[in-house]
Image (cartoon, rainbow, N blue to C red; front, side, top):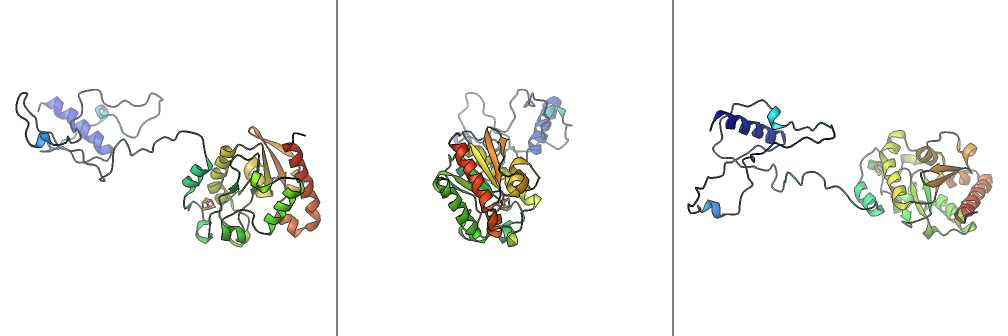
Length: 288
Ligand code: SF4
């Protein structure tokens, strides 16, 4: 092997090492016209020697890749190995299958739930019983977003099934909205201990899934129930009693802030403001 071939080969070997491929073999050379050897009649092994062509090109976007081009590598001095086989690190490894396949098609709630999996992304995971993903019409015009699951929700894996949920149902019935027609979820999908307010790191970990849910459903109206939902969806930090009952822009949808039903359970005299806001929701959906 002449010096320049050796250098080129060395550069390629270092390039593959950068990719985690460490074993190589050299295929037996068969003279033209000679009968094939038994070994060469077997299904072909992955080609080991790099093709005589330009090494892989970096993307033209100007973004650097982690694997440098072979030509830029310093030639190594290890001897030519007796055999060269591209040996994958794992039996099923394939260099081109290692990268996750790009996803196509529209976002769906099923896909988001699948991506959430048995989530352990924040410190609420160890104490939850069930992930409360959300429930309802996947094409709902109206999405309700609460703060987080309580004890009943954690137990059943469904949002708004406790006392606050019953009040929510009553408010919907009062203005002629069917629960099956809406979608209901929370800012965080696991119950905070003692029903405390979700903390910032928990909201940061969980809210990307909420945004994806909204994107998948594409509602006309989002109703934020309580301050944590308002902060997460609208980024508004003012007190809920100051901003409730108003409509805000949220992309191509509108968002309405109102009090959480649990707040009304603690302050029964405030039920009328929740009722007022539900009447605004009804009027908006009817185009009034
Ligand atoms: S609250 Fe959300 S981010 Fe945290 S563990 Fe549960 S599903 Fe995962």
